[in-house]
Length: 316
Image (cartoon, rainbow, N blue to C red; front, side, top):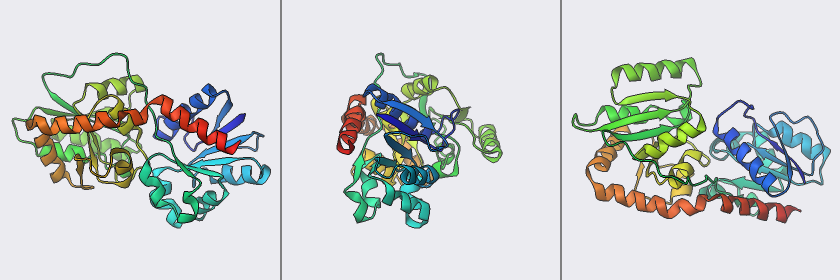
């Protein structure tokens, strides 16, 4: 088939939406289809459309549905779709109706949808290829990392505030990979580095370097307020890096409701306590490690490829 994949993220972007679109295009090509990624859909003919983001891709969704009403449309829902827009935004709500299939990136996402749309919704976990070689951890410091752009929805400085309060004898060093999406965020990060010797903002890095930094870390901190299914979590699981995550639906849908490594949203003090325990209690860190290693197969590329094959088979 000829497939158009629309995403609001521009071609040069390294945001999660663009990363997801590029990976899906590669999977669809592997399945034998022609794929064109478009930020702005201009009415080109195709056999099927996959639209990433119900609200922001609504103009493309509406145009395609009008021009080709008999052809299948798949709408993939982001975190802002699930946990914000579909409750109040008419465009997002209309996208749910127009779609032949809806895709969510983690199991809890289905529960956010009105009952009428759940039967046509499929869960497709975002995959990450397992590296052939393991990377050694830094022995002189206890490196932990945050992977994510500096945006309010990510609560990007919560981990920095948490490490401020660590005891003086802690060896924890916090590495933050991600671009500042505003001048204010950049100023905040630079100011934090001046006053917090444990915090190191590395800015945006190429994906290969981000993967290496994550691989060398003892822990990923995921502090988002809202998330549809974070690439950073799937990458950490495949790289065998344990996770401390805010207790939000998007993370619970990937890590499980009983995962022992949650902290309350916005609670820096609770996160500090978790970090002290991580550094001083090897059994606790081991329990997180074993849990994460058990989940890693969910994010295998062959599993994601199979999920897309099954979905397209349903539609065609």
